[in-house]
Length: 421
Image (cartoon, rainbow, N blue to C red):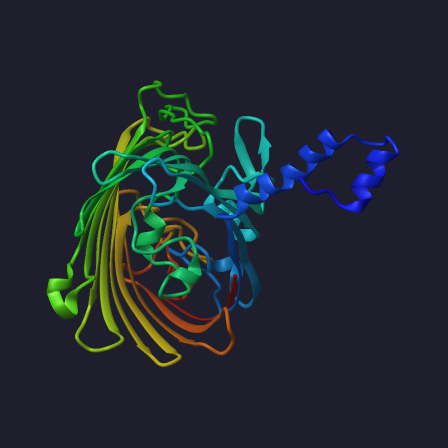
């Protein structure tokens, strides 16, 4: 091994020996080799939101609800380290996603800086959270069996947590019905060029790293009693993709998935929950024009802490998407209809002027129209403007509309600026 003059001088003076120096010289190169295929990526997501009208109440929405209206917002910062699987038969890799900002705790209630009160209740969610952290493996089974073990995103949904990867800035009603994150194991297999399947087992239906499943208790108090060790959350999905022979429709995809299991101990009245999802994306012969559609259905068992009765709650949402790309312009439109049992979307709470909620057993029904325009001005920057109209289809709740005392509608305007790296 060749040493520099400074190293040789220290060795001659007896300060170091050449054997130790050789090991020190080798160590950095070994580290660099291990990191050579690791990528760093992420984004900084900001917005400015305005709601027209006197009331600020927003229902049925996740990341741009009441607290973010009429002001400027830092939504979230994401950092991602990943070593993707290579083409080798025994390939290995990993992924680690970290979230910072107000939306972090909304995604993962076991956020690192959350404060845990006695009894297992989170009085306030933190602004730092792990989104994904898993080891990826490939086994030489058939066409190759890919395995994730650790914390990973849910397998269902048309939209994702990462707003820059969605056609619209605000999330759909359907997104709010789906689980977000699981701790467990997931295997996926590419059956043919046009079909792939996946299946997995996790601790719980809802988010929370290393949280364990729980059974509802009659008192509805925290923490809920733990479930049997065999009561896990199970999930499965399949994807069909149109081959080249379909011409202009090549790449069209149909996806369906199901997730069933128990929530964690922070849900003392919740029983078994099942989410079913089916979605499709369809290109057209017109360049730049594509359509999509999604359907979400969720059924759950909820224990009434007062009567001790076990009630069956449901919720579903239908979303239709249209997108058109022309030069630096992108136009995305989403039309939605959602309905659910009392309290699903928060439309049965009487709004910000109501005195009493609707009686249990009644349904909520919401309609939404969202139009987003994106124009590329700067490199690596997503800059878009969105107008959204939410409409309550059921009328007054407890003497008030859900969007405010006299509001059956919510009209909002948002500016979304994201830097991606």
